[in-house]
Length: 309
Ligand SMILES: [Ca+2]
Ligand SMILES: [Ca+2]
Ligand SMILES: [Ca+2]
Ligand SMILES: [Ca+2]
View 1: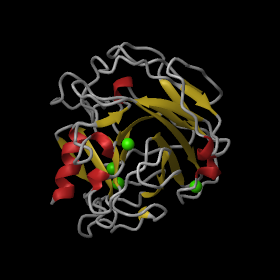
View 2 (view 1 turned 30 degrees about the vertical axis):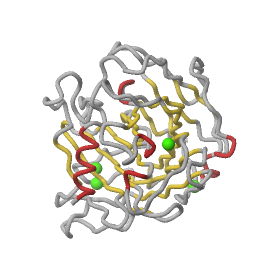
View 3 (view 1 turned 120 degrees about the vertical axis):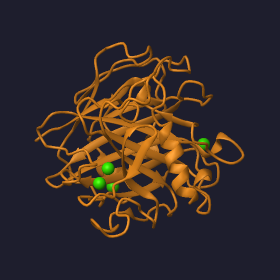
């Protein structure tokens, strides 16, 4: 079906290139305490600052090993409702999302925050881009993906590393979101359990829990051990057609799912690699295309640790 093909093709390209960066822009990284979305600011491209809870490094040249970007996820009380007010005080990492090599996509400013409680990991991914949403055509709406490393050696290019996209270095976990349900609605969360149809395919809202080993091998979490209670609510600060503002993607998932196709997260444990992507519906007259996303993987994994306190 259309949606299925779209997701597959798009994610093939999610992390398709790391050698060269493509844009010539030095992505900014900045750590700030969370502010209300209405106060979201544009990050100065040159600025790189570090604050408590996160460290940053300037991405750019291909896989030159520098200080890894890290993000510490605190204990917090979060409600997944599309309202980011509950993230005040949770440190965030500003990220410039970039085109893959060979694509002409303007860099976008984004910010990610991660928190946890005893049961769930929470992610707030905010992207500065104007509002477009068409419930009949996901390509005419914003779209996002959050990816996590499952295997320690997995490459940030959907399990591989450039230039060899055909050789898997390990498995990755992908939360892929096409906005087929309206702002403020719960997406996912209640999809079928193991062994019931296609439990990794959220047929209701198209917020799918997936996995990949290389860009060409990506699937929904449909194994017998599949656990797919991934829940998200999206919103936008200025939800009028072409309204300038910030996309809000708020989501949660159990820390431990027992699903072989998910990253298992542990409070106080080793860091977990994360990468981000966003598809802009203004890319062309037909909306975004598979390769037209802006993404963070050129800059390597963002290393997330879940702090006990
Ligand atoms: Ca909230
Ligand atoms: Ca746009
Ligand atoms: Ca899963
Ligand atoms: Ca998964």
